[in-house]
Image (cartoon, rainbow, N blue to C red; front, side, top):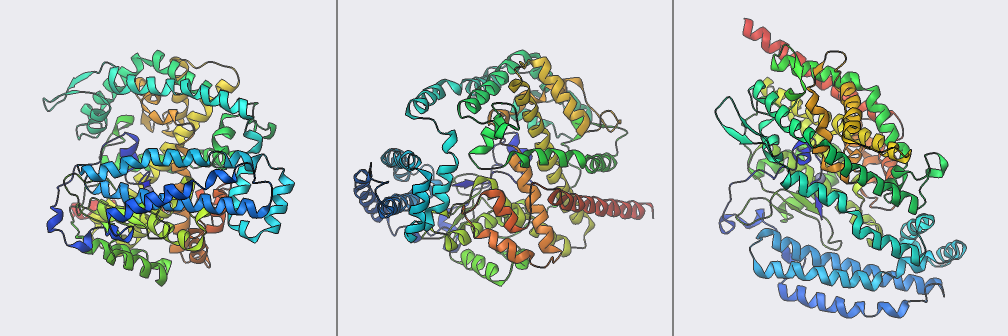
Length: 639
Ligand SMILES: [Zn+2]
């Protein structure tokens, strides 16, 4: 299941852990069928689902007979993998039906029971397969290579086998793996204590705003009130919220120190030293090793964002102009600078706009998506009891992808449709082109196809309106998306790298030290030394507010995805020869290649400056367009 994990427009809300906005519920009985899922495409009935599940459980009983025999012949290995992936394929279909049925109405007890029954079912299936990877791993590399040469039926599994072999030197013997598994029982302690403390136990400041409203500043209230129109209220909200975190920086520091030490323990245990290039025990190499991302991608991101800070500074000056402020403060960064356009769209208009926006990707792309829209791949409307938010799910390999929306008619809802359609078409082409074993694309590339489509929609909308207010709204959102996703997430990524490097060198992190490191980074990003932004001292404890620092190098991928999709969509929109074909090829790759290589096929190399340069040019042009509109508006006012 792929939730909408990061989009230009929503990244901020997600970071803050905001619940999706509440939506007005429709009555499903009154909504035309064509706007609702047809789950009968997956199984014709609950009874058919149950029958398939029983058959799968029966078939799984054949697995143990392969145990201990994978090295006997290429044919034997192939037969075992055929069975294992056949089971997974049917399991994904079963799970799709049960979870989506339950998502339509979380109060539906029988659907919930179906969904819940999948948990022990899948645990049992996983347990039955748990021996396969270690047994493949134990085979000599030369033997595996000979098997792959000899048996054409093994070709679909080549990337899978190669990935198991790639991780060989980071896999311990049975005893070592057992110790690590036992240790993991205590290793999530810093994260769980952080959650309990930051989300519940920490005493909260209360504040009376200029409106007379008194608010208790927990994290949800902070995200709500940091954007209030009165700037002195905003400043006080920042001061109170971060001042409170700052008061507990000792505890937060001890927790984060423990978390980073845990990462180092794991990196050392799994022998990650990045070929001796990084310190012995490289947390970065360890975190990026699983998904197979070269650490160079991470360093390149930080280097390029630094190089391009003048664009962020230009943005800050633009924001200051639009807010008409004598000086910009850190607490001014969330207030809206563009007026929401109250244009409403119907579902039919949203589908039409999305199809027109993706036209640069070719007729076939448009036709498949159009057919999907007409064939009930999407469940559009919010109902009482329906799962909130939006997602695309392409796990049912033999069926087709599905999209869940809670469509209320805003532009953001149209953009969400384009976003989820991006995931869906990525799944569609990968499922169609790849064998099941390599059909599911990785998290690292997942948000490229979705945000790519958001960019196409933005471009289409800009080209088809001459209303300056609408243009300003679209451009403002676009630029702010780059600021929040590329600059802000990299600011976090840089902090993460710095604190891990400290611990790798044997230094301890305290709350004071973490404040100092954070200050060094945000002062530079926001030009505090150049008088661009005034930052109140309490804000240097912002790190204590970010739960992602307990996710072990995760946020950077928001920034790399957005850079890749912005650069790729620019190439397509500017008509670069071969750009469409390259991007379409990428959509069909599933997980058949390492993620960075897949993106090279698409046309971007994230170890180079090029995608960042293209993204910055796009941001710069959008800011210039905004300035021109503002100049025009000012002139008109003076007339
Ligand atoms: Zn997404």
